[in-house]
Length: 129
Image (cartoon, rainbow, N blue to C red; front, side, top):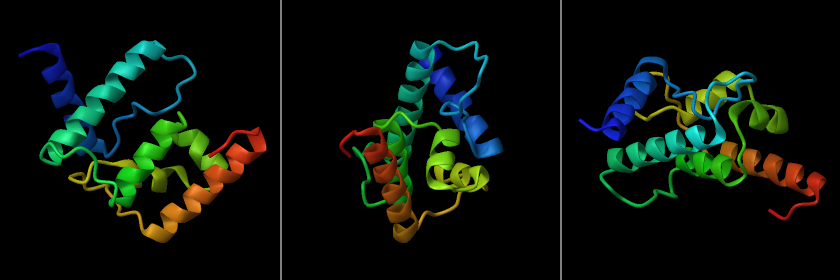
């Protein structure tokens, strides 16, 4: 078994056991470099694609769209919670693997509220959304 397969299996194990893979978490004294985190995020994305049967991206799923938004704007869980005023535990549940007992479905209205918060944040930085 190659290291990529092993890491994907471990990421899946952690998501199922805890509901979060912690790859997006902001840790002040991380042993991981930005490149390490990027590789792990890529593996987690590949895992999600394979869980969906190889489909490219399911942009109809609000939970998946939330993951894409966070990735697009390089936001971790803590940052998005601060920007949008959402409890961290709830955000972690929306981002959990659909097979996890911790998974919670994100509604379209909730996603719209998060998108509005991100847009306000971007405007405050002078960046286009």
